[in-house]
Length: 260
Length: 274
Ligand code: HEM
Image (cartoon, rainbow over all chains, first blue to last red; front, side):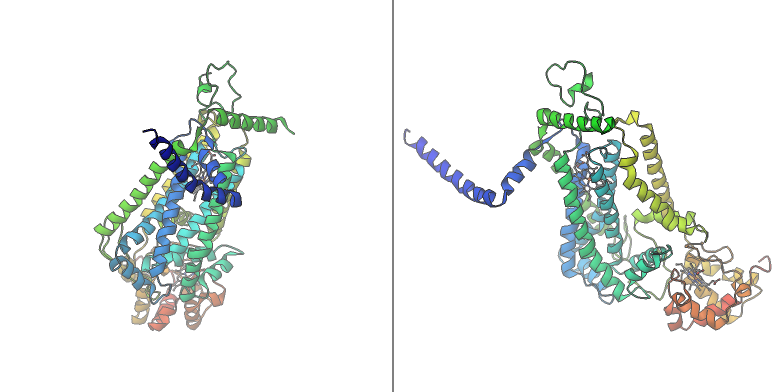
């Protein structure tokens, strides 16, 4: 008995070392361990609620799109002669291809809906006010970019629905004054919607637009962490009132002050 | 510094202090909620994918749509274009402003104003008040926005476009109103009805005016063009400075381009009561 306890302790400290040494190594060279700790253990308002999950839910939907999109890109062929066939192949022949394509297709709608819900939450909570104005603007940019991602992806299956929806979309664009015809010409890549159009939409959908989205979402999350998530309007600080005048017993915190 | 600015800053300082003293750590509390919600989101996506896959069969639509429709075919445009649902509101906006003079309001005007309002929101509403009951303007704006987006989306989803097959049935009526078509003109009318011209042009009450396209019921009696010029125009409108109307090279390939031009030139507006 007397010998086992120190031995166990020694074994534990060895284990501890096995974890600590690489972490210390990483921390000394990058600061990443401290950053992760800061991210995980930063304080959020006591009364933050389910409403606050809509942002990370949107992020999840976006990551589902990125993952399923990558798999689809392994098999999809951006060529008017082959695109439709490759979509059929993915849906009908590949193992679980239907699931990946189905998730990508319906995930797009879920992503857009969640962006609107999250935005509604931010609006109703007045969370766009000082000092979060810039993050609201980044959010609007994300919304527009997200819808652009939907527009460019819609053409890729190269079936009648996608083709004619794009024809109308581009024509509407062309009817705008000044820049309209140029943008339409750029998207079409020629006089007609064809091979060049599909290549362009593919490049935009696979690289340019998601790249922009990744960057914007990164900036968005940086600002969320830097400024902190706002407390709900019903808590004393969030409502824009001054702190409770009544001497708070116990906690003068975010929820308690409301009783004043 | 203005005192409003000072107040805002002081308010944020108080917020930071409160959160520091009273808040809960993100992990595990908020992260737990986030994880549950994310699992719900992924389940919903997988669920939709399953319902979609197992109730539909290829081009046969199931509960929420087919796996795909027929392959894209630039030649036959009897297909009704429909964007993905989250563009319905824009799509329908264009139908509200469909007259040539105002179409720019739908394509550029309203969307630009909306974008400016969205970007400017935090600068338009600078009060510190965040309780909904004390923000009547914001509440009314939110309700109006939600309702109008909902209505526009619904209208866009249910907007009945003239289906090619329905429009073909109208060719007889067109013929009698225009004083009788010969065989070529009739063939041209049928092509015209089916290839999508009616998505933008109105002809004797059929179709819908979109993106500023003129009514063509009396084209023949008003145009300065010859039949050949009209055919050239339809083949590639961009050559004539019309970058809105798509080119229709498929018509020439099918040998019906001239028929369509003949038909248009036989159109002088309603003459009889048909
Ligand atoms: C890909 C899309 C988006 C992602 C992944 C995302 C993610 C997030 C996350 C994780 C938060 C933390 C708080 C919360 O979850 O509510 C947040 C906060 C915020 N988001 Fe987003 N967001 C997106 C789109 C938008 C849009 C479209 C807007 C508005 C136009 C917006 C405006 C804001 C603002 C102002 C905050 C700060 C809210 C606060 O501190 O209470 N975001 N976002």
